[in-house]
Length: 260
Image 1 (tube, rainbow, N blue to C red):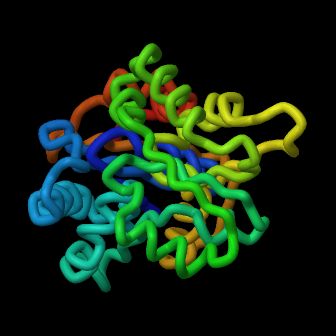
Image 2: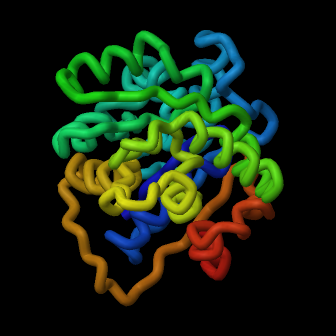
């Protein structure tokens, strides 16, 4: 079994780690775009073109399924990617976990990139799945970029700024950018208020990994003893895992695995 994941940068690490937990024996292809990142400021047309190139690089390795490990790419490029690759290669998008977060009743904060915060896409998800729940959209200026470069000073500043915009009564936070899932413990510590119940965080990685297995009719086998290979593609060229990825546990999980 071979599972491919794509993103402009290392935001796909959370979903990759989730895949590895469910199926340690799966071969993994990670297709990144260091030549074109970040994708967020690009026009939808330009972003889609970059995403297609990254997806085609992954598809050349004949995966059984492709995960788009990026909320922004899912919004703008998912229909094009599915038209290009399906039914031969199922394509799984990443959507902020607003629906399950709202089930708890809130109050909910959605941490997302400034481009996503207040967008018709996110507002539509809130309207569809969080009606009647108090929701605060929190723009996280510079956080994804800080995570991408493992810039500890910038991460601390961005997390602190976003926490200051998060109402004290919030009990649930949706991590609306895949990069943020790499900082789950730090975000929890920054937002947790004295006297409040334990903060609940919702990311997309586990759900996306499970959906990928369902689409190809595979069952989770977390106890598998064979460890699958990892292939890293950097704007189509095979290479090493970017050094900043090794700052995070999810990246170190892949470091010792030989490439295919």
